[in-house]
Image (cartoon, one colour):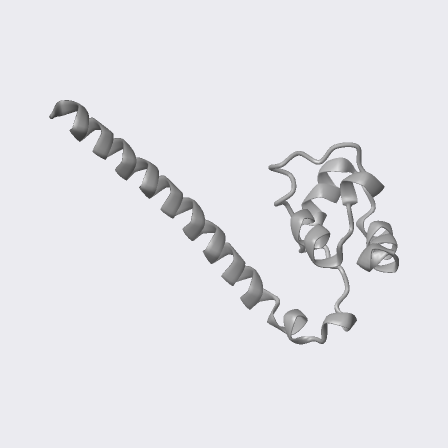
Length: 108
């Protein structure tokens, strides 16, 4: 009986942690969408890569492998950071990087 209770508590805690994780991701995406609603209302072919976008988002939306083109290794926890955060941390000029990325978007 005691083992069953411990297992149930562990399952409950694991479920709670997963719920918190997915809730955080969902809410953060809603906040990003609300803050940049004008951007997302533009036609897709007119949208440009911006510094507020995460590395993951840029790679998925524009089909650009940033790790292969620009950096040796992008750590998994860095992929969710914005491009601006990454530029500041790595001392990279974001304006030049944006020009390069917007010229090469869509995997060209």
